[in-house]
Length: 403
Image (cartoon, rainbow, N blue to C red; front, side, top):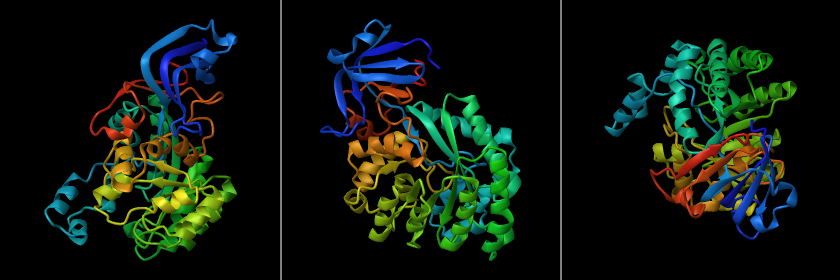
């Protein structure tokens, strides 16, 4: 953490503060940093005398935004599913892919067989790619173990990532991701005999920041998710939910009923679900990578979410099957091109709204009191971040006030 106060000068600040400009832009701005926190942000002409003598660091006219936050990833997993990707492109059906050893259960098999060190080593290249694009916070889910030992090992690997790299890792317990083969046709038993005791064990070990689930016909019913959420409430853990990705089971409304931090995917969300989320303050996490990879046709109801004032986050959903994407900048571009978010909405979705989706109130904007996690960009306007494809304009990250 930066212990010596300093001021950043000669910059364009995209503060993400609400106001007339959707980016909260301040030209010829100054940011005063002290002990890892933003002490002041504003135009140079308004710099208080108390900060005028702090050592300056000239950013050469570059743009500064809050560091990015990837609030939905499955970056810890065993192996990959490139062969399955190829089979699908050659015309294989889902059933044929499954018979050939593909699908989520192939990832479960590989993840169960991997050690914690192997899971960490496999994840680090993806994490490094995210950091190289200005990411400072990554949410990492379990959910490919589907047994207690493997779920705990995934969460330990996620915690290890946060120690090996300058990034804040928030973990989500996702044992309710799929029904493993040994519990086929017995999803209720799986929740009772595996997911619930694994959650208690993970919580006791300090491995869980939030509890997630997949509410879908191919996964778990609202009633089964509700039982797991009741345990989360007992343990004092916030919840979030994969909801309405393939159909509408009322998962988003269920999540809102439990005060969820977020409901994610949401392609089949209806207005009743949107209204429930708005009333609960639940963030909608938009995941265009999965929509793109699965070649879906029904987009999330962006206009409804806007109309009811539901904050929209954007994330990679980085996973080996439906969204093998480690670029949050690309996710921002896809959110604009596929779902018609504005570039300003996409940047807010990868900063301030992503922070809210993780229950973090101390980052995501360039305002006094926020953690000094910043991204410095070689660009003239923040719309460029969502506009470019395959180009990374990051100049440097500033994490905890450290250049």
